[in-house]
Image (cartoon, rainbow, N blue to C red; front, side, top):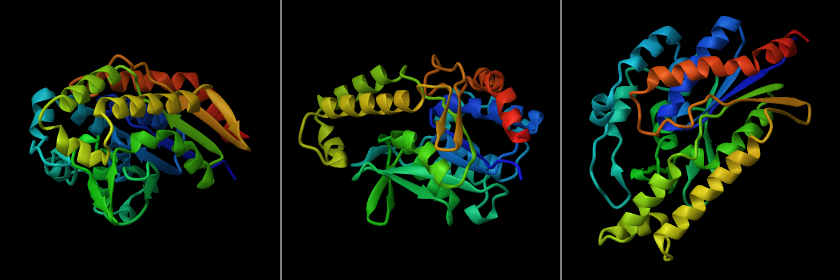
Length: 287
């Protein structure tokens, strides 16, 4: 019996297009995928792929998205909890994904973050769109998703837990596709600082349920996220007990989170990044 392969598609907004290049390369190399863990943009790509769509068609569609298309999917409506409602994105995704997890061709696990506890919430059944919407909810930018009496936001906040999740699901080979970058941290810190010094900061502070100055907690949070990612990705490969973990890190660090018009570049980078590990994974599968 061959080893069980778990694929982690991490968050990174527009940089997540690199996942399409990785999936394309996996198909060409006949690397099997037994389950997918999707986080933020990785949840979108994972859900669409697991819904049975042809990866070449997905790549073609992604290359057609420009900035105007991206902006048209944002239903801005400033509220106490966020600037974008997210209903347009939900409607758009319904044209690509199945209605429920149970209908998918590949088992999928979607990770969101409980903003009140900071812990991960894993979706594996039921409403697929709701799970995706929760996982992509960048705090303050998107309204959070109400779930079981709490609020769920972007799963990237606890990205580092995905490897442990994959191991717990029985993967012998864990492939971690990391499209994170520190390039946007300065932008978000300036963004939150400007909010903190405006008269409209009160709704934002209520959202985070804090009394201390907003810039401090945002700075601490973004720094902590980066440290968690850096710590989980120190080595290209490592052993988790008897689990082999491979990290694929496409060269998309210089792509801003909102540059959804850079799909072709990200896809190509994802395709090329598989070079670093493909031979070793195939050897593992043949053992």
